[in-house]
Image (cartoon, rainbow, N blue to C red):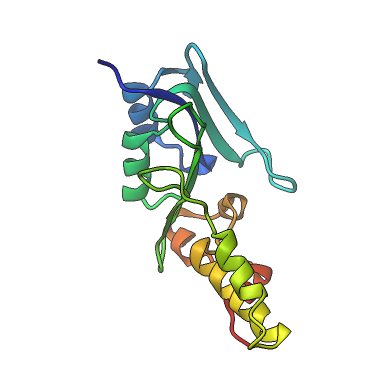
Length: 189
């Protein structure tokens, strides 16, 4: 019996696409190498897109497989984590499994967030908990806002966008910090 197949997309800074990663992609996924570049086979799409303001030589490597095993890229994700390369992965929804987002940023501190649970139907944040915080009359509006920000940061922590790693040397990837507007979210007054 074969594994369930869902669509999956994984993205990481293109500058880190080395021979070891290319070999992993070709060995485990429907892709090949043509003129030194990874090319998709069948329903697989491969592209490098350039965030606004980035040089054309840099960008984000995007690999999409409409029939990815469980919507994941297990071998590739393990290799990227071993090499401490940041990535975002999105798995499409299927009739028996919800969509899933996996975000990895090397540290310190290391950040690995999976927006789904094994049972698959848990909300990212509880609407009941949000209402409880908002409607708590025992606190001022400012205290409720602080509690709300802390709860949201705990349930879905802020992280640097993948585009902030474009143009960063691999040795400096773990030194990336949150942009100032994201740092404010987790700071206490």
